[in-house]
Image (cartoon, rainbow, N blue to C red):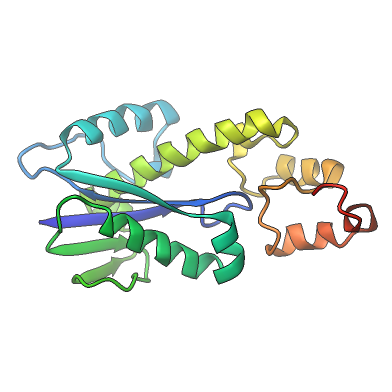
Length: 195
């Protein structure tokens, strides 16, 4: 039984990394599985419901903002991957991970570049992780409405950078990221104005 594993949020400048591990049912084919970034939000949500209904097992895990800042984003991602795989209620025979790095787990594991477009179980994991993280960013948007987290999901778009320059970082920004760290060094933020 094969498991797919993928992360969402590694390249974002805010909040947690989300990882999903998913074992699909080989007797139930889900049409439309592909890299979650290539699907509309509505299509992702519909597929996520179908995946949850028919997958043999799935688990979403996170690495916290504090873990990202303490360990670095790469190590935090691998930690979340380990948590997701170990959180499955069924132990897979093999784990396929999107990308070129694998977590340290006691199972056969293989990294596949662009695996979220090649392996249906990775695509399913990508979709579940993306839907979960997008929902979290909508919740953060309600708390910190000045930053537009509902649209860019924390990635450093032009609008996000402009909001950062105007308002400074908020508590969910990854303060170890260079663009955020540079803003924090400005005199108006050194006194703890934002924190």
